[in-house]
Length: 228
Image (tube, rainbow, N blue to C red):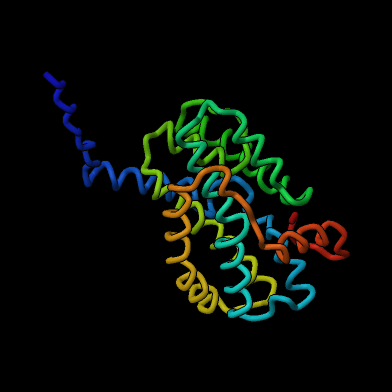
C-alpha cells in the first residue's frame, strides 16, 4: 500500500499585536534617529549634484529609482534576504563587501553595518558580529523572527529616504518636494523587495553605472559634506 502524502501545514499567522510589534521594531532600526550615521553618506549623490546630473525633484527621483531598481538597492535586498535565511553563512557578508564599487561605498556599507550590529546587540540582543549594513539588517531580522518582506521593503525605503534627505539639502529642494519624491518611490521599494525574495545570489548584477562612477569621483571631490 502506498504511503499517503504528508498533509501540508499552514504557518501560524502573526497576530495583529505581533505584527505591530514587528513593524515598530523595524521602524526603530531603520529610523534616521538610529545611530548608524546614515546622514553622513550620499551614495555618490553629492558628486552627481556637483556636476548637475541631478538638479531638481525629477532628476533626483530618477537617480534614486535607478539605484533601487538596477543598483545597490536591488543588490542589497537580495543579500539581505539570503543573510536572513542563512545567518551562519559568512560568505554572504564577504560577497557584499566584494561587490562595493568604490572605497567610499565599501565604507558606507561596513561602517553603518558595524554601528548597527553594535547598537542592536546592546539594545535589543542577541549579540551579532559586524557585517555590511544589509547583511546586519538581515541577521537581526532573522534573529528576531521579523517578517522578511517587511524588513527588505523598509530597508529600501530607508535607503531611498536617506538619499532624498541628502538631495533636499544639496540641490536644494523644499521639504514638500522631497516628500513627493519619496512617495513616488515607495511602490518601487516594495516591488524591489518582493522580487528580491525570490532571487538567487546568481541573480545579482547591477547596472547603475552613473551612480558607481559618481561614488568613485566623489573620493577626489574638492568640497564635500558627505563621506560618500
